[in-house]
Length: 180
Image (cartoon, rainbow, N blue to C red; front, side, top):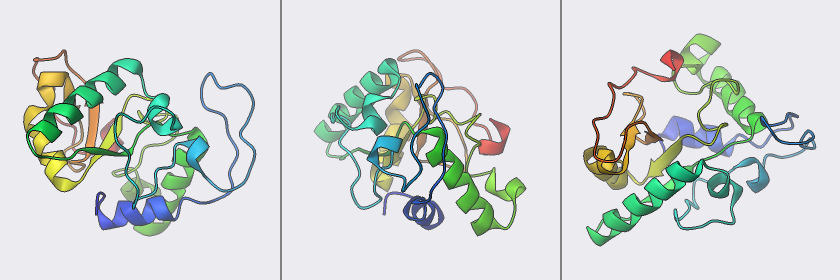
């Protein structure tokens, strides 16, 4: 599995009806199930970082998208397949993940350690990706700074952001998403 069992369950349970509009996006998304147009990537179908027609990847910040693509090519050359399990998310999708986390963890304080609000999520702004499988998390954790990619939360080995210049030093990790 590419995500922790709890987050995998959250992603699968994220098919809910909510409305909302991403910053800079004209008009609200119609209510209905969360889908690909909201940034949903099914847990059993992670995406090749080279895919560009899927909103979860095409709406990533261009520098992040390029860094992940380069890292994925090098990881594969080293024998480690690297996939995106989550990228850009519409705010209504992020809200649904937070609501499911609140239900799963029994309250917002604990849920916020794993899922940011739509207003603070780096996924909503296109500035974060989740990587899988576990071997790819490990590979990127070791080599990510070469591309400017850093694991930003200590409790989420799959969550990476463009947080340094290529070849730079990654900043200290935050304990969890509630500190972001």
